Image 1 (cartoon, helix red, strand yellow):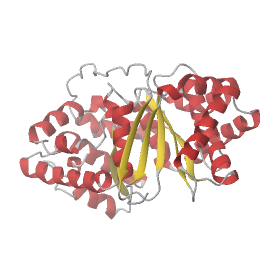
Image 2 (cartoon, helix red, strand yellow):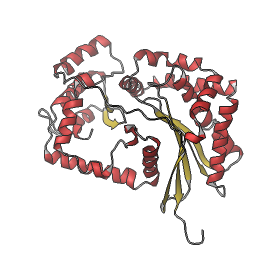
Image 3 (cartoon, one colour):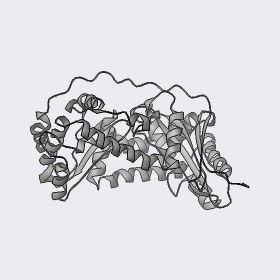
Image 4 (cartoon, one colour):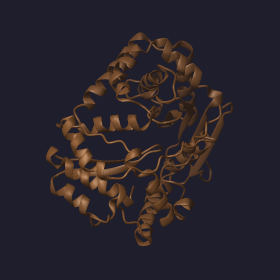
Length: 374
């Protein structure tokens, strides 16, 4: 990702960025577990120019030892500043490595320090030649353009890039079924307020049975998705014992993903009280389900979010791109609001009971360093 902003055989380093800035646009990139994204927001008349730059760096990147060494140092510094200097990020890494016993999702996206240090030009060249090809890419254009014009532009730019070798089947180890409870504890002097996070391996939209991922999405919203959620209302508002409490579910992955609940105490409340309160709300949904009112409100918020996303071309491009890159289709995206509307209260109760099993969870505790007398 970093190297893609360096020089090619046709353009100097920084020329792409300067061209985008000159027309008042923006560009950037990011990497996830399953894909890397390069994105630009520009006026329609600059679209073909951007495609030309992207097609060029897809095949003509200059990779030498000097460039590799410089960007490797940048990535190492990113890791030091974003992960190694942040106890919360360190714990998140350890929890993921414990949650996933066999799957590559246990490896952090940025990589382990000792592995980054060893990366060289041969590694970069092999990866670039194998994966940065038109037949391994998804192009998404969102905005005031028509499909015929975009297709013609793509043929004049990306169409001039030779197809790469057919990729062999990806080795995607299957995560074994979890049957034990695991804990990870990180104690750090930089921590002032303790916190915890409990996670389970659950299906993603790509691996779930019909309706399960939608039910997990709604479960996350009802249980801990904002100020109207059960966790926030019970622990933050009513009892006043939590500084934070919520959930996280990211269903757009190629393989099974994670569902997490988290919390931190307020004032004199203890971490044990928060964890007990969170566990109670999880078990209550698994046992008693959710109300019709809760479910309808959550559905409305989800469908509205898709409507509001259409106000931003970048949001729509990201939705389509991430779905297509993780095994989904355009029909999946277009039909998603209706699939959300079709979820029943029993569906939500069922996924909570099936997947949020306490005995199968991995919990991470972030604690302050003990002081004398405490």
